[in-house]
Image 1 (cartoon, helix red, strand yellow):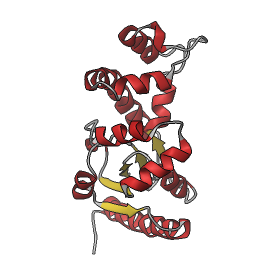
Image 2 (tube, one colour; image 1 turned 90 degrees about the vertical axis):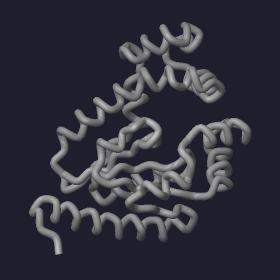
Image 3 (tube, rainbow, N blue to C red; image 1 turned 90 degrees about the horizontal axis):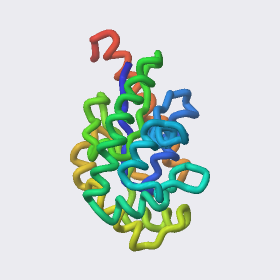
Image 4 (cartoon, rainbow, N blue to C red; image 1 turned 120 degrees about the vertical axis):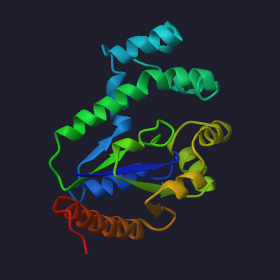
Length: 205
């Protein structure tokens, strides 16, 4: 099975692209969803996070205070590394498990920190969703309750756009209309199906 790694900066439109592939019956494994499941109440990762960052990192009901944790890790690189050391191996393992249950021609693996977390070995091909920094900030201001300064600090903590571009096999410029984006996804879908056939038969023209 061909494995496509979907990545891009925060607010670039990865979720929209994932949805478009799902509408074409492509299985999507989402690292963000996996991360949320791993820190649910009763999960070992949440216990580890509590031990690392203190009991104040939890809400009254025992769930993770995501906003507080986000403020901590994006304000201190060392704290960010501590969280990554907890989460990245678990996410990696969960993705591998999820892939082992799939039988599709190809699958999409959405990993926002694909490069930062050194998870490129999980995939055969990398698809980057891209837009301008100005668009990232505009979208996040509408979507999340964060200041421009906080959004910029998150963008700055991620791999640069130039690095993504130079390491991408395929690139989606998510600055146009939704119709244009959907057409681009359909074109890539057909391309990935053709690659998958080649991979299975070991013969490509």
